[in-house]
Image (cartoon, rainbow, N blue to C red; front, side, top):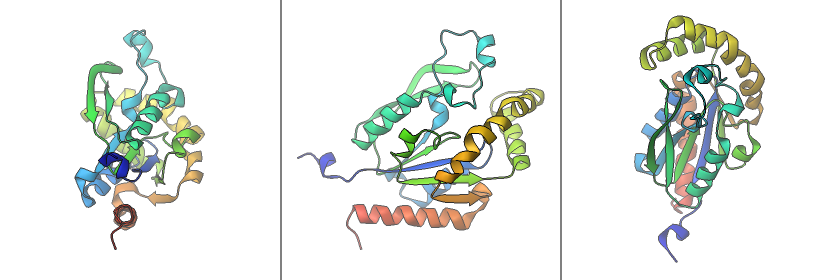
Length: 217
């Protein structure tokens, strides 16, 4: 019997919330508190659908906060591969071309896998793979400020385009698809990365699961 077959099933943690809620901050904080070589973070944004058949003008009209924008089937398949201790090729998304690049990132399976994104709790097939489900709950005004700062600095977008997208798709999609998934969460974290108590509690829970997997006291 190989070593991988002797290992327990990896632990999958889903971290969701609205855009700018602090999902990534929470995920990174857990990453820092745990043994980093035992943990992998996957971002749902990597799994936007390939749009080679569309022009850039057409891509700009896509609603990227709708479940149909994501290749959820690929994400599920790759999570299942990780659960079976198989390596995966994670797509690399280019925000400037609004499409997948030709590159990918090879990721090896780890004992703990965090999948982070706005809609990771919306699909029951994804939820069924998760051991812990987390909803990061942050006020709308804080989220839009964070999104403006991120998109203008990191993604080269204008203030006008960020605000327009927020009002036309981001906010309506949040209330239609994202906020309702709060009911599936095992843990709701108010104020995202600022809530150190909740992050510490979640990290402690994950450490307990790892100790159990290794049969440690």
